[in-house]
Image (spheres, rainbow, N blue to C red):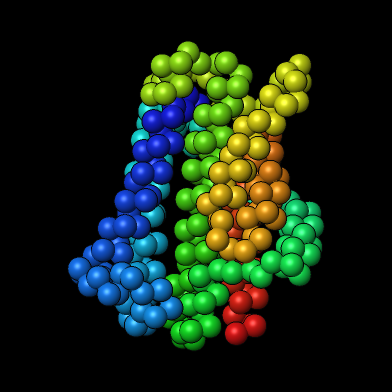
Length: 263
């Protein structure tokens, strides 16, 4: 899949713009509201922001997927059939991977919070506004929207782009703007003769970006970096992000459940 830097930047910019537009539209020019922390916003405005942000991010994801699928994926219909055919296997793989990956990640997180307090805006919102509607909005964002958007951006676009660069499978111009459909295989593993560091670089790079996206959550970004390494490896081995999405969704679901019961 001939991903270019342009693919990565377009989705990143669109996601940023979507968040800004939603906040500005809800605040409607109220500078005082814009300067307030989210926990001080009235509940109706918070719910509106949560719902519109999820909708905006899903819209950006849909646009990115359509562009990616039509411009970058060789034989789109055949590739889609393959994904659907492998869906039961990938879901099962995701569940097994979740059971293997998450316990050590949570153990690391529990160790880190002994020294650095864990913070998350969702925790503040749930603590401040205990309503069923807020729980549903947060669960939708965490369990559905975040895994889909983040896995597509980090694992499908960014990791694939870095892979093309370190493996020298594209000329410089193609690395920037990408290429149209070709017969390039979708699976990017199965290169045992390549140095391990070359194969690991795309995984490490996408995991680092994934961790940076979660900076501001106390030590969460550290444990999430190692979590992302596992997701990157699964994606590289299967050539699909389905299992990674399943693991990500299950972890977020577990976090939301813990948040609900602890509140």
